[in-house]
Structure formats: C-alpha cells, structure tokens
Image (cartoon, rainbow, N blue to C red; front, side, top):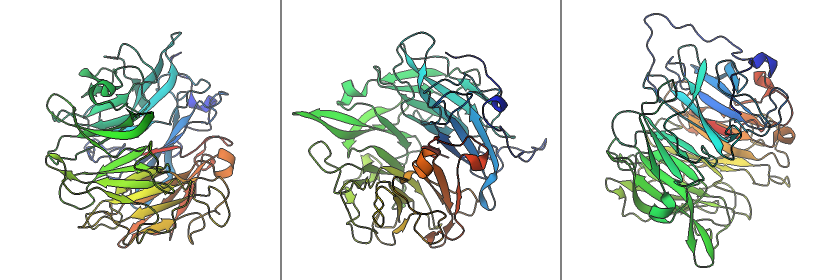
Length: 477
C-alpha cells in the first residue's frame, strides 16, 4: 500500500551522508547524461533490493554515488529508500526497491533523474503490481521523488519489470519505456514527465501480437544514427515444441517506436558504437548454453554483435564472441555465464565504445562461481578479442579474494565519473559475504581498464544495513 514516508533515520543509518557542494545562484546544471547533481561529473546508482528497511525484509534501497575529479568517491553518497523523506511509499516486505533501474532527464531541467521500477509493489488492495518511481536530480542531489500517476495502463502486472529511457519520438523530450507483464507488454510514457507524476501521453505496444516476441528486457540506443532513440525488446518467441530467446528492434519515429527487424536473443544487451561509424551496434548477451531454445548461447555463454546502419541493421554478418574467441581471456566452460551482464563505454579515450562482459559463474582455482569480468575493445573493425582484459578478485590490485559463490560480474557499468574522457568500470558481486554484496571501481587509462588503485565498497561502507542486501544487484548511471 502506497503511503507517505517515514524518515530514513528510522530505517537505515543515514540519508545524505556527506554534504554535496552547494549550488550557487548563477550555477546551471551541466546537462551531462548521468549527472544527478549537475556539477559536471557523471554519477552512479547502485541497487540493494534485499536490504532490510524499517524492519521489513527485502524492502530495498538505492545508493547514489557522486563523481569527482578523482572518480567515484564513497564519501559523497546518498542512501534512498521508500522510508526516505520526500520519496513516495512505505517499506514493505519483498518490494525489492532497487532491482530495476534506469536514468534520464525526464523533466528536461538539465539534471539526470533516476527511475526505479518497483515491479513487486502491490497496488493498494488489488491484485495488480508495479509502480514507477522517479527520483529527481537537483543541485543538492536527490531530494524528492514522484510516482508516475497518469496516464497509466489499465492493468498492471509487474509494471516496471524492465525500464529504459530515450527520445523515442524525436521531439527532444526524454520518454520512459516500461515493461508490463500484462498486455500490452510495453508502455511508452511520453516526455516531458512532470514532478507531479504526469506524463505527456501513453503508448501501449503489444510486442507479442506485433512480432511474436514477448517483452522481458528493454534496452535503448540510437542504432540508425538519426538522433532518435531506438528500442531493443528482448524476450521469447514460440517455436515448434517450445520457445527460444529472440530480440526485435523497434525503430524510433515521430509516432513512437515501430517494429523492425529481429536480432539475436539473450538476457541482457547494450547499444553502442563499437566501430565508430556513427551507428549504434547491438550487443546481446546470452549466458545460457547453446541449444534450440538458446541459438545465440554457447559453451559457457556468448555475446553477439549486430552492427547498426542508417536503415536499422547493417548487411554485415553478426559476430559471435565467446571465451574461446581468439584474444579473449579464459576458456569457455559449461555454466560460466559469459554474457550475463553487459555495459558499454570508452575505457581508453580512443573514441570507440568498449564492452564489459560479466562472467559471474566463472570458477577460479577450484572456487565455484567466483566470477570475473572481461573487457572487450572496440576498434575500426568492430568488437574483437584483441586487447581484451579479464578482472576478478584474484587480479593483482583488485581488493578482496575470489571465493565460492561471490558471483563477481553479476552487474557491470562503464561510466566516466572523473571527466577524463575514459570510463571507469564498476563491477558488483551479489554473493560477496553471504549475499551482503559489494562493488568495485577500476579506473580507465590510455591502455584501458587497470586494477591499479581499484576500490571496493559495500552497504556498510556507505552507512547502510549489514547482512543480506544484494548490494550491487543493479547498476545504472
């Protein structure tokens, strides 16, 4: 049941734990994507959906980490839950606040906002579930939030199961796409979205009916290079005797996303220009073993690169990469889960997008599911294994020690928090310390990601609760 808030002090150990720089009267927001407080540095948000809040199990919270000239600074952060003053709702058992995240400037004020898809939130006493909560960016950080209240789909079945932002109709305003298990499976809330919770309009899309592909995961990006966001819908399609993973590209247009070609399926994806030709490339990750139901999987998992073009997809043959691809560290082994998580960013400042690939079930020195992250380099020829690097808690310079069921690489994020033109790698391990979870920050350099100077932090580092939190279950920036 949605109510007004309790103070965070009654639930966790702090709210805004370190004061952010005060905004001056003449200061203007940077307008930089991923900058929540407008100071010119990109920030990051980390979900801890199993954290106890106000005595409620799995109520969940998000930690907002602010960028600085030296990168991510654990001293500049906020912890925000449904118990935080100014945030709608009240903590309840199993809300899992923080396990679905995306970011974008929804109200057009120059500050990036955070969207939390609270898909397990029950709507009053009904049998409907799912709320979209916007945490509004501002000069002093996140101070308030709003649930999107209108217009809403008639039926809500885990609304917010997946969320993505982009300008899907090319009108210059940020829109919000949200998966809804009830038909239609996808809803576009047209921007701008006001701080009262009202969107400009709502477009429902039944992807199952239009394309035969269900809506499980949404990923936004500009594949066609026309400045309008396209939307990748990942799900399953029916085949003889069962289902297989499949994705479909919905191309942005003045009337909103329209169904386009089908591409490789999987469970996570990013859209980024890995060959610097001006078109976004679709990188899908299928961590499962290759089978009739998982045609894009592979021994230990695989990723597939489908190259973009002005018309949508290039005629170039998609490229499949596994840990057996030349140059990729490691060896493809059953159940490694290569491709479980994906992130894109330029780690060395050469203008090509690089791809971080989570391998959370990688066994290291006999330790089952210790986990690792592989960073693949973009180039003029596209994404290859050349120059790839692998990182784990056994890598020299990375804090900690690889242990059984850490699942290092469960979530990954590449973002330039220091404003030096090179993305940092943030990687999480949901199983660290028996499910407490933790995250690591590794710097980008002229040669890519380095473990030198790596930092690690968890829920208690930031003043949050101890014990089972799954800190790092979701990352966004």
